Length: 262
Ligand SMILES: [Zn+2]
Image 1: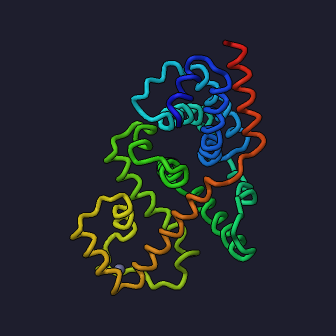
Image 2 (image 1 turned 180 degrees about the horizontal axis):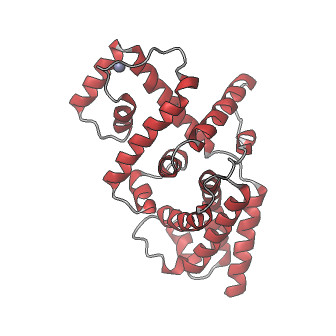
């Protein structure tokens, strides 16, 4: 986010505010959909968050990144709605149908859609805590530092939760992504967590060499790493879905409310 733009929005420039809100709105809406599991609740979370941004942006001091701060607001809005909705039916993932499809063959497009649907239901089955960290870090692409700030935990705690969440995701996708593999043996390391540590730059050179060595002799663990890599790639393309008209409408409404207050 451009600092000058942010400054203008803080000073009450409605056009600048519209650009700021337009930039954060799609992420907030996706977060709401994943965490609240209902279109209506996600719309409400988006609206509450955008209004909170317009009201409080001038108090934002930049101690965390703007993204972290916005997700802190979104989490608060989401938590209010999520209470008592634990057994709500999962929302149909129509975002898959809206995915950007440039440069893909129809076959690639079909398998990407399939993977996206499988990923969606795997995420549904995870705990809120795991789903949240995967949404922030692996779908929305926040850095570990930003995701930790948004959730309000230490970076160390965030990463440890992330490794466990990715491992749980891999387990959930296992019947689909590793159907032919024989199970890992008692000699195998916790490969998904270790692979996740490697992705976060936490493995020492020696630990990395040990892992690579194991992968050359163990097809099961090698398949697990491939599956996790594929799943995380699919997570990232979840964030490239085109913006829904409903999201743009919420941005316009929040900007209109901001103008009327100015
Ligand atoms: Zn192994």
